[in-house]
Image (cartoon, rainbow, N blue to C red; front, side, top):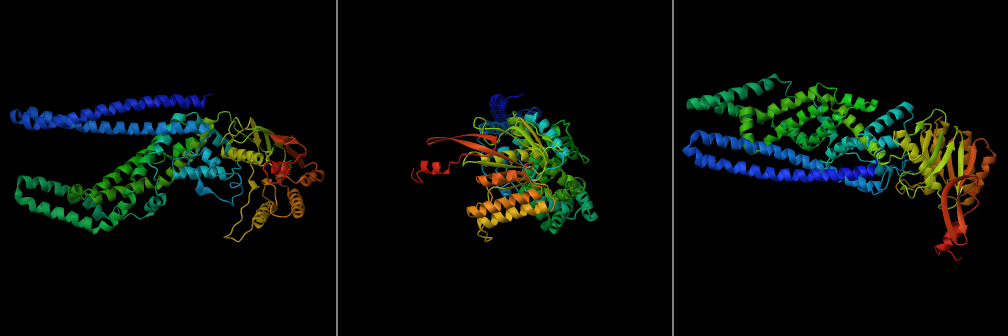
Amino acid sequence: MINPREYYINRLESLKMTEANLKRKIGWLTFFRLISFLAIFPAVFFIIPNSLWPGIILAIFMLISFLVLIKIHLRQNEGLKHVKALIKLIQNELLALDYHFGDFNAGIEFFDTSHPYSYDMDLFGEGSLFQFINRTVTKEGRQHLANLLATETLDRQIILNRQSAVKELSLMPELTEDFRAAGSYDQTGYDREGLYAWLEKEVRFISKKFLTGAAWILPALTIISIFTAILDSSYIGIFIVLYLLQLFIIGWKLTGISREHDLLSKRLASLKKVHSLFSIIERGNYSSDILSSINTTLNSGEISAASSIRKFAGIVSAFDHRLNLFAAIFLEGILLWDIQCMIRLERWKKTDGINLKNWIDALGQFDALASLSNFAFNHQDLVYPVPSEKIVLTTKQAGHVLIPDKERVCNDFTIEKEGDFVVITGANMAGKSTFLRTVTTNLILAMSGAPVCAVEFIFHPTPIFSSMRTSDSLNKHESYFYAELYRLKKMLDMLRAGRKLFIILDEILKGTNSKDKEKGSREVMHQLMELGGTGILATHDLSLANIEKEYPDRIRNMCFEVSIDQAEISFDYKLRDGITTKMNALLLMQQMGIIKS
């Protein structure tokens, strides 16, 4: 087992050494590039006048050296950029090991108060489970990760397949780090819908034989006319006619061409990012079904996704030459450049573009799984849960993953069969709500394919429905109490429709008086028993614990106790069988000076 902290510290030291070496190389390359450029001038102005061919050869050699050094310099700069991104990434992971994870995307866009459980469980938002796990670098990856956490997976085999993929990727930390570092280069995102809309548009250039023919014949004739005019200036008129004819054709199609260019040019940086991400995914040798399937998808075309996107980005980059006035004067009138680029783009659209949606979706899947694998790597003390056909839930030493190790208190817990309910009583701040979130958060992780915070975790994949915190709505003219009733009704309607649910309830009917609350809560529990509900209810209302006598085979009482020694209150957050015997509200109010002691 790799110690993640030691791994990151060693990796950081190695990367900083690599960074220093690259900076030295780039410094020397800059120096030699300058020397090679400056050496061209004496060759041209001093050597050639005295010794023609040696001077020409030297000038050409220094020019080629200069161009080669530029290319090497650019490649080294890209390497340095990648190393710097990796250093930042590793530094963030070291902070995350100490539960400082506020710099990661919190998934605010997925915040939904009407979701069956995500609002109650702080699944999205600042300090959320999503933010704790999320390391995605694409919009699709964030969406896939959000879906994994907010959509229950009930198929045992799918869960096991995801676990295999997460386990496999967690053993490839450097590959996933390279993936995330490459994904950090361009954070502007890209309008995938705009790109998909372009793919759906009908081709207008390759379908016209006149344009495809002109794209090759006219440039060839124009180049021939140039050489002819050099040999005999009387032929210059032919060149001018051909040049103007090409400009006329460009002008004829200019509006449509410019619209296509505007759409694609803005996505060039993102296309280069996607190419890098595809290249890194294709680098892996995978054995798990999901990762193998992703790799197969990325190699489903005539060429791999990475090669195809590189080709696409190259065409878009070449298309950008039209923005340079001097280049455009040469390219448009001699090579019919815009038409050439449009034909190449449409051919790519016809041959490879049909695969783009599937490739991007596969990229999102990998991105989400890479986040889960990073979570697994960082927390190697967690275990992979066992999906069961029969047992609802059996867990040993379950804790909440968002509570740091030194502060976390873990508990054993079991619900053996469907239709069983556990009623948990306890004083204020004794740990009831935290325990409900502990159980539910681990179930969410379990169904996503991730490891869970427990020593052992056996569960039956079941849809989750919680009612822990309810918000009123001025816009909808809903009171707090009405919103809570609406949520409870939704839960009961789902049960009446035959849905199997794992139900999490925390102090229901908080918005009414104590007598109504007691009667209403008991009625809700009776309804749950009649409908075969399964789950946990946490409450301060000790009278609800008496329902165990009515359903002794289905309801079990458990509690969190509080220790009160004169004016001192302490909690151990350990779950016990039975009903609590101590409450602490008055004492807490006295300690805070709300009421007199």
